[in-house]
Image (tube, rainbow, N blue to C red; front, side, top):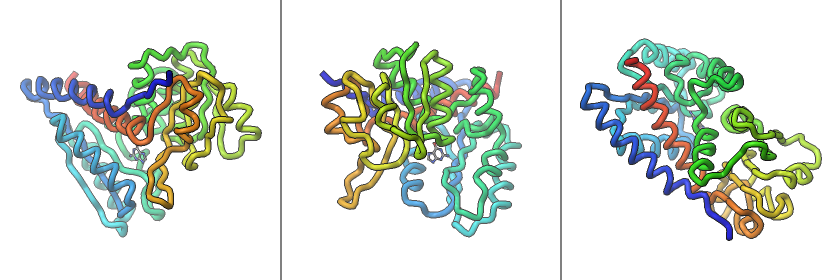
Length: 282
Ligand code: GUN
C-alpha cells in the first residue's frame, strides 16, 4: 500500500514541540524574534509570508513585519537588513524571494548576517553545508530530510535523483543527501533523457516548477516521491510537479500537494529561528 508522507500532520507536531520550548525560553527571558521583509505584491509570496507569520504567532515567536511597496530601492532594503543585523534582540532575518527586478537577490542575501540567515541562502552557509559542517540549512530541503526521517526512510546508499538545480531546493538538497551517504544525481531543464534517469531513482525529489511533469512512466515501482512543486492550473486547482493520482499507484511513499513539503518548510523556518535564539545566548 502506498504511504502518504503527511507533512501537514508532522509539521503540526514539530510546531507543538516548538511552542512548548518557546514557552520555556520566555520563562528564562529569551524571546525568539524573526524579521520578515516582503517587497512588492507577488501573490504567492503574500500567501507564504502570511503562513509564516501565522505559524510564528502560534509558537510564540515574535515577528517584525516589513511589507514594502515594489518601488522600494535596493539601498533601502540593504539598510533595513543592516539595522537588524546590528540588533541583538533579532535572531532571524528573512527576505522573501523573488524580489522585484531592480533589486539584486544576490546582494540582499549576502547582506544578511550569516548568523541570522534563517533561510540558509548566504554563500557562507551554503559552503558550510557543502562541507558537511552546516550552521543554517535551507528550510525546504531540511523539511524533506526530517519528513523522511519521521517515516523511517533510510537514504544511505540509495539512488536519489533530484529534478531541479535551484539554490533554494535542488543544490542544497543534493548536499544534504550526500552528507547522509546517499548517491545523488541532479537533473535540470537541459538534462537529456530525463525519464531514463528518474527511472533509476529509489528516491525522487522534484522541484522544477512544471505542473504534472512526472507521470507514472518516469518512476520505478516502489519509489519514494517528494514533490516540491506548487502550480496553479487554469482551472484554479493547485497541483505539484508530479501527477499524484497516477504516480501514487506505483510509489511506496509520496507527498501530497498541498499538505506535503510546504508545511514542513514553514516548520523548519520556525525551528531554525528558535535554534538561532538559543545560539545567541550561548
Ligand atoms: N521564496 C520561495 N521559497 C522561499 C524561501 O524558503 N525563503 C524565502 N525567503 N523566499 C522564498
